[in-house]
Image 1: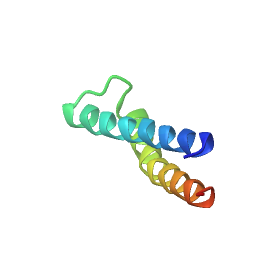
Image 2: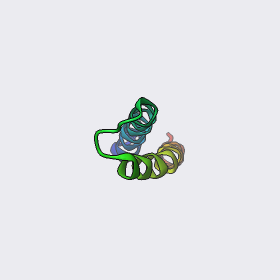
Image 3: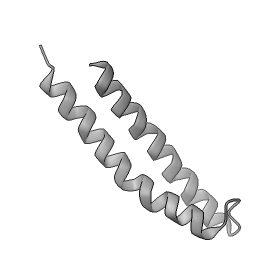
Length: 65
């Protein structure tokens, strides 16, 4: 694992945590940031999770010894 793939993997984890938090906030009925901001956060964090994860895997495979 390279530092670059570690950063991508960390970004994937943060985005996944944001997605899960947004789901719980929206399901509570009264999100702290409001419905629109929480929905936008959810809509952005799901694809970012996947993109960062695949970038981390691709970088790790490219730098495999």
